Length: 230
Image (cartoon, rainbow, N blue to C red):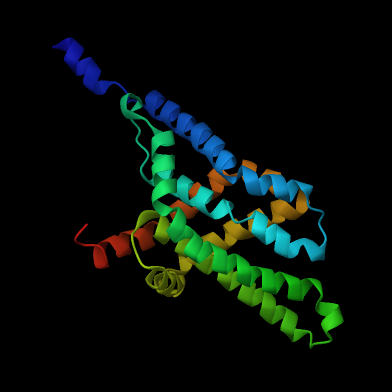
């Protein structure tokens, strides 16, 4: 009887929970880097020149499905060391969501490429100064929209058009979550400018965890209002 009770308690204590979290962090971070490796190799070889903005966007294409798989694995992670399989969850999420993710990730990258190129060559365009502020605002709004859309297509099954509308709707529905995601994006952008894309990728797990935490109200409302039958 004592052995059965001990077996049931295995993996439920604070030490086991901490070990499970550390194990999940290491595995998901490693798999995220592995999934994004083709684009990462290209980014490392590119110079930070405005003419390379379209190529950088192309190299960033694998990051969307990789981040989506990390979100999926974190959302479905288990604390019990006797039933801990973040790698299985990561690849399950990657295979299930890669096409849906690319339907929102690729258009967003294309739009950000246009914004980036216009800002890079802004002085040569001869347009009013307020146009630059407008482009920055559009880019920031699009990035926040993409964060919501990425969470939605990673955890739920919607058509791309429906996911896009929901992502836009929840920007105003939960302003605190939107502000939290904005802080994450500012930190990621600052790290990229101060260090490199490699530094951001090293913190990708923390970014995914923060994004998932900020999105809890959105996830709960989607589950309650739009996927009641699941």
